[in-house]
Length: 195
Image 1 (tube, one colour):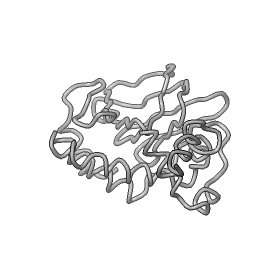
Image 2 (cartoon, one colour; image 1 turned 45 degrees about the vertical axis):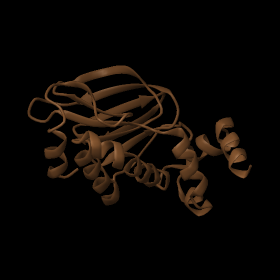
Image 3 (cartoon, rainbow, N blue to C red; image 1 turned 180 degrees about the vertical axis):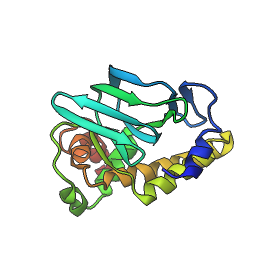
Image 4 (tube, rainbow, N blue to C red; image 1 turned 30 degrees about the horizontal axis):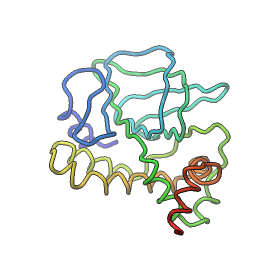
């Protein structure tokens, strides 16, 4: 993540902890201390690390999410995580709850080619590379989070584009599976769309 992103996010919090924003479902988590391996329960979310690094463990799998790789948790999962942070370089992350209805609609519209292109994933949770487009969206999101009015008016379209970018990511196959293939809510949503 670029320096402008770090500059903008620092306007949104003062202390370590989990901070609400003007946009429901978007929180900022920051810590200036190294956290050893600890159990966490993640709900359906996207985690964008703006500074620092986390290493997550799920059975024998290891996931690294940092300023170059985001983490997507398409279903509620327990993870053991190690957080790398210091006073000089605190860990700063955006936790974005994934709007299920919005994600159903996006994945339903994404071409089959995009879904086939993505790599197979058997563990559910996945990390993927932060592209320039995702970095630009993150900066736009941080700008609007400084205003209650802008968050209310512009927040949803930015989140929708962000969800689209992760839906066409290289490792997003489980996201497609989770939201379309084996999900009753998705089947109901598609049936209602037809009606």
